[in-house]
Image (tube, rainbow, N blue to C red):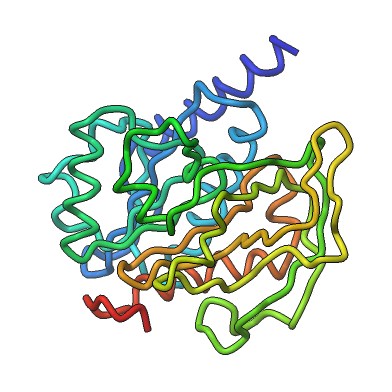
Length: 263
């Protein structure tokens, strides 16, 4: 297993080096700039997701008319680097220093846009970054199911540009689902777009989420942000519905005006 992980790490790092930690697609400079932050020294299943996500966004960059930059250097999260970034994406990690936290807050409060996946939103009740918890809707990590399992998802708002290509409900492939305490839904600024269907509960074998409210895709309408709980393992992009969701979510963030209405 250690050999397998080492080989995979080398492949992901080689991918980043081949792309020069810069533009992943030959798109014109006039196109809006999307920056992906990711890490390699993390959980293997999160690495699998990150590798496939990089390939997915790269393949869509020309078609969807954005310039894509990817980096594992989280110190790039600073005012100078972010000044022309239209959307920031966190694939499998979050910021590591106070300077990075400060830069992220300034970027978002100044009208920047964020797309976060799975573990990028992880915070527990001991977290001292209270701004980030409020940004996510006030919830801290509660429980997760284990092992990763498929689940039926309910689309609560099929009129949103993010969910416009989705049916009322669909079967999502295997993922580690997170619950939040309290539920982000209780924040009046949060708009829940997709949640776990009640028919899933209890979900898990070793670690179990009991019947409760589990939003999995939402936006805090005070900001230009979108969080998706998908992002564990190599099955995320096997679903056409989830590929449409991710593509349309990024397009929504790119197309939004600098407004605090969330519409």
